[in-house]
Image 1: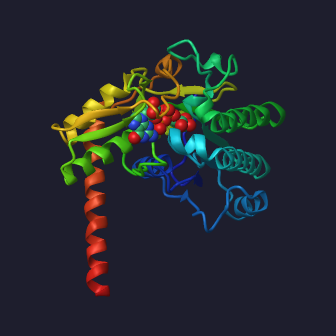
Image 2: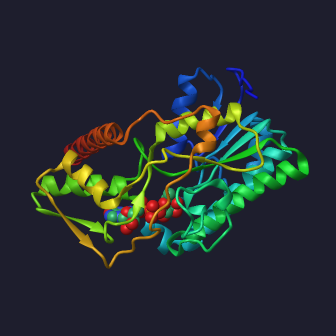
Image 3: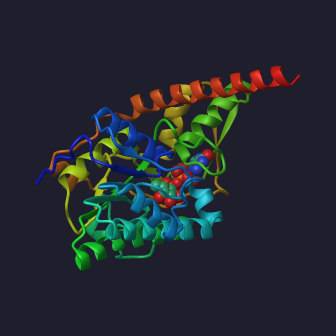
Length: 327
Ligand code: GFB
């Protein structure tokens, strides 16, 4: 059954400054919502239950998009295990509990496709959760994300809260993290090919063997799915969000190369981890509800690269202004 969120609803986007949160805010603004609530890290530490309770009491959100978290690519996940498990566990716990305590009407929690077993049958259906061992490079993050799903289920079962969970595949788009050590593969490759073109380097390093398969969803499509699910999905079980289509890291690198620096050579560094061999989502459930993505990978890559170049130029320009004023 579809619920219509009144345009003046108080809607809290927890994590509004991140890749996903900023896309959710854009989507809500486009839909005409006038009361979107956000809080910066300095205003509110989402890991602190008493701060979160205080904030909820003062702001009384009616709908919550729980898209905050400590996130990163394969290297960050495997080297910052404590931050990935602690921050995420705490953020999920505080926001879910405060949402119950202050009678939020509905909460949508966002997990990740890394919750599924490393050897899951492909494409991965929702019912494969907790049927086998996790991928070791991101098990800390995955455990926290699984706990988030279980929190929503537990509050739904014990207190009757309308809390639902969605599991997105690998995401990308404007607002992504282009840092080479903490970011995910797609922005990292864009940045590497871009820097190589600028410096005239011939080869670009690609981590791993290039054979792992990944599925990529543009973050604006994800934000659209989040609003769709907030209005139409109310179920105990989580739901997958993706395209259902994947490609190898080699194929992705070739696409980025062709877009950014066609003369570059790919240099695979197999001393770096591959991670999960494959994790393409079965999106039948979402498709049956009537949602599908609208941004193809080639178009998404081109617009994301444009965004990156623009940001880079602005940052360079700002640095230039700073240098000029300080000299
Ligand atoms: O995107 P990514 O860091 O994370 O890496 P995961 C995907 C694949 O790209 C891996 C390869 O096989 C990497 O070895 N890769 C190649 C690179 N070159 C690079 C590079 O320059 N940078 C990066 N980062 N990778 C994440 C999890 O796993 O998936 C998170 O770490 C989250 O927990 C996310 O769940 C959805 O796809 O392997």
